[in-house]
Length: 278
Ligand SMILES: Nc1ncnc2c1ncn2[C@@H]1O[C@H](COP(=O)(O)OP(=O)(O)OP(=O)(O)O)[C@@H](O)[C@H]1O
Ligand SMILES: [Mg+2]
Image (cartoon, rainbow, N blue to C red; front, side, top):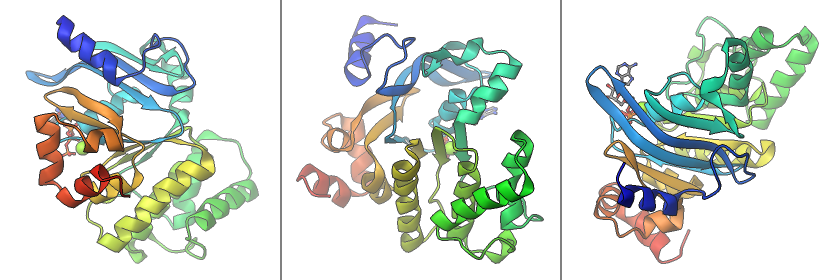
């Protein structure tokens, strides 16, 4: 690791020692290196995720965004580097501790990943049945509450195949919320949705963040959506975080790659933000 990289990294991330719990930064990644065979995907990457905020990760297809967030909950282990969550070194956890630790996280995938043969209610009840000793009526109440909060009243007995894509994503979020995660990770939640459904998912992300005080990590390619929801943006490029900061800072970045990436994916959003608009 050369000195210039280190200097740049310290400008874009929190300055407290990463192994100390910090009220501002919930997930802290330092020196993360990951290869699959000869394919070096992440190289000495540093990143901080801000607590209670919407943190967006941007990057080209294949840049390593999904690989990166899988490390946060130790679904992948790095070749080198560290990940701290609330000051816990996640790589030091044993199997039992890890299973408990992973319950801090909720995951919402691109294709909702619901069980087609289970009803909406059964899908959402599944994590509670797996991980808690709650009674059937408690489970029904929790599931009803989350579905209601997401505007999905009355869908309990329907099957995923009977719902629209946007509704399925909301069921995916309801299911992720039943265990009251502290950190919600969305991997391309709006891919394949029309603009109206995308807006609904954006609102759902913001609402979940505000209502349940969760830390949100969102991978998205939809730039209009990104600038509607992001408190912070981290740009993954060349196996590292090239730039990170508030949406305004990133929109105004003079880094040639960041500038080109944003311009190629929607000049108007960038222009509006740069002028101080929404
Ligand atoms: N389990 C795995 N085994 C081997 N290679 C993998 C594995 N997971 C990811 N990769 C490789 O790591 C690289 C980064 O993949 P990743 O899925 O993180 O990209 P991404 O930024 O999420 O892309 P997209 O925007 O298309 O989802 C790719 O070259 C991919 O082939
Ligand atoms: Mg991906």
